[in-house]
Length: 313
Image (cartoon, rainbow, N blue to C red; front, top):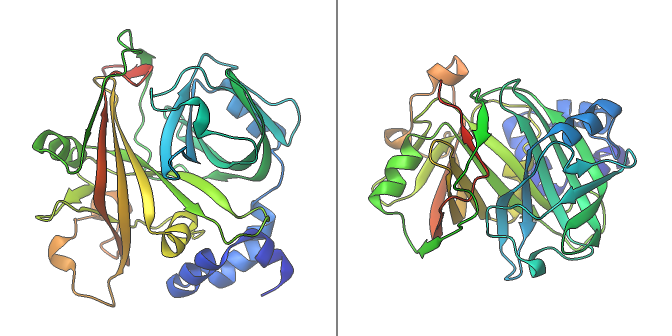
């Protein structure tokens, strides 16, 4: 393994890539694709967003997926290695002690109408009551696969922030998850080094409504659709199985947050087919090699936490 590969992928990502058969290709394209700066078009993209998804470790030491909201330009990019994000509008879950100087966070921006998405991992270089300043560690784009197009309008009920907490999913939660066409997953890797590949990460998982199933044990099952071959999330989960899942109810302006333990099920290793979904409608193939299994440990229902709602078709 050469130094360029080491500087891009951590050991969990390399392990999954080797098992999945993408390692040779990732060793070649990874150092070219993942940058330590943002090109001009990415800086413009982030500045135009009205929401950004963030993965971070909260004050209790738990990985968390959340969203920051604002008008266009609530994210600024003074240089090609920096972002400044106004943090005043959240799901209602972010508190002052959650993000501290030196923390490593994951960022994901998506334009649902154009299906464009960019990711960044960054370190907090300044934080106050209104904003965080971030220095980019890794920046890269993602393909538009599995993003279901949506348009948004303001949620006039945003800001009440009642929160209900439970240890398991109720039937309403299960019905909502089973009808979702997307969720967001935050994961975390830290081997004690100070290189660019350590820290929090957040990514989008999407498909046709029903791409998430729930078994009789209350576990969430998601087939791992073919993607870019990076395996950022799976690499993190291999090293640290605790994750955070965020489901957004864009029709009603609510959100569902799950703290979960995870398992990566390789189909050649186990007979798990009775619980799997039919994925041909999303991938064009029945050839799914892995399924993610998430066991909820904590359930949080955030009412009116979304600053935007989906515009009815």
